[in-house]
Image (cartoon, rainbow over all chains, first blue to last red; front, side):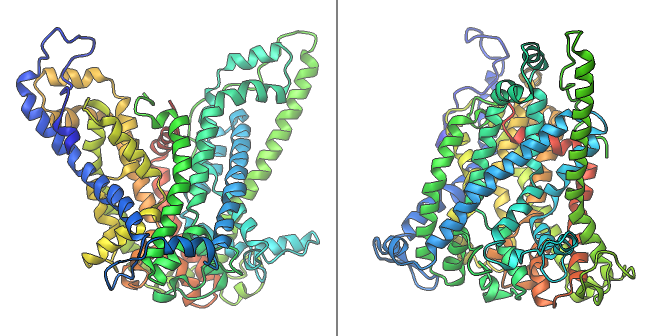
Length: 334
Length: 299
């Protein structure tokens, strides 16, 4: 609230005028101020209740033992001690998440850039091509995971059937700990449409005369990409990479649904998370582990410690994003 | 179909200038054109194949889905009706519509005015508010899940979808960000002219900004609608133990486990879940694509 009480300027100064002329809207000032407060209050309340408070409360809960039934009990650093020294699954979960950060995010970007590059050059029926490559991104994640688990199922799935035609004995995909993550990578590539559209817009914005100049200087295709295309799309690449990493950091739904559907177990009530990680813990990501500890085992204090650690890691990338991406600075994106 | 992204791509590669090389270059360009289109076509087949296989399986008999086969022997369109009997699919769709519809309506009521203030009115602390919104929108939801869950448990609303719907009355960070980006593109002069004519700030918002930024508001609405329609983590957290509150996205994930291993029915339901989303896309493609481009850093 304090921010809006001190309204500097009710924004009634017409464009181009300086402070010398009295703003024409001055008689309206009190009304203007109240309407601004009314417009901003819900959002500020929302930030306080669903962002600032929970962030602070997570830190507090992380120093307690809390099961939702009895009030939180202060236990100092014991949650963190357990996290770093005793938790049987946290490292495996963190490594699984790291796989999605290090492999899924960059590979998806390369694929999206490659397809966007092809589309930027396709002049005939470009709209149809673009729609086609974009559409999978629209499929609800749960639906796309269910579809992929079926397509890649080793028994009756079309993928292994087609592979067998060319003499390849297909792997067990979502049912094999060594293949479950690569299976999700293929899914990730299929739904790369969002990033592709952003790349395509950036590629089409590269000034054409720069290519002509490079071509006159005798630059070949690879050199043109390196010295003309790349410098022009660096901001978009940084944006895609950092948001991709932040998305991979919280990788949850796809892995959880893949485990649930591939294991074939019912997931009602208490058992909602029993199949998380299937097969063999290979798909148990960090955020799923947080969910299991917090909301299946009701160790909310410990889950908060996991959340604080997640926040610290996410904050590093957030800072990177705020510094590097113009749209995220208040003055940017005009 | 063809209206998507109707920007004209620049002609690449640029036409060669030096005369002697022209003939050779033209032959090379043709080769490049052919190989690019072969590649595009191959990729396109890979991208379409999943949907084709899912559709073909969705109309197979349950006996046939137990064998590895690609083409339906008999076309069992009845699968699409049977899923409604095997699972409370109508109810799930109703829950999804309630969740997505109310969330979107609430978000617009709360976020449009806030985004207007942040885009068009100079107030002290605006940068701090904007920073908070950016961080709130990028923060993994699991970071704040515990205290937020505890709040809703104290209010007795866990076990329903209300914890996912009601917060939108207090603004949604990503929507505010996106709306602000759109409002910034409305020239300042229009708002100033309206103020000179004696318009209040509400008047400027409803009579000048909203009509001019309609595509942006539509894009923000569609994004939140899709986000809620596709949400899995939210319903898992709050409603996994209350099947009567399940939305389709959550119900679909449980279907195979609780209703045997009939892939035909599972694929029929998968098709049904993605139909509404694809329909909305085709009615609002341009708005949608503009929104994606603006949400990613243009500018």
